[in-house]
Length: 92
Length: 113
Image (cartoon, rainbow over all chains, first blue to last red; front, top):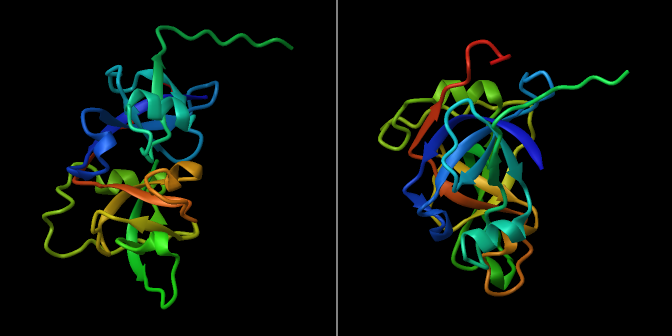
């Protein structure tokens, strides 16, 4: 699972039927300090995360197929939780 | 799923039976800096196709059943999930799941936020 920040959304009318009914959000993987790490990933979001909110992104296809109830869905990325608070503990 | 610009088409003389009914498109994945460039614009209605900005990221071939054309920005999935939509086993590892109409990309101005 990745820790991501929600940086936006996309709209797409022409899409695979399993995507309909879900928000497609742009997720920016971030490192411990919150700086971006890598290119954005798209995911479907059943929980309605707000802009710049931190969320947990699951990349397990079988979970996503169960959520969208379509065994033939090509989707893999799914927002499974929205972070309320984060605490960085350095142990050295 | 990732975003990419369709930059070309691949035609095969001999192909797997599972490939029938769709097209193979060449896609250039978008980098983070390119997201801002496409944000807030109506992507489909622009008559002049936006020039595909080739980047160092290597292009890939994805299977398309939605009818995307060169210049479109599409969302594609990779890996085992890409062969999920096929009724029979298909050797596909990149599948175009959507053609993007609009990207609303608003990263926070200071990264720490």
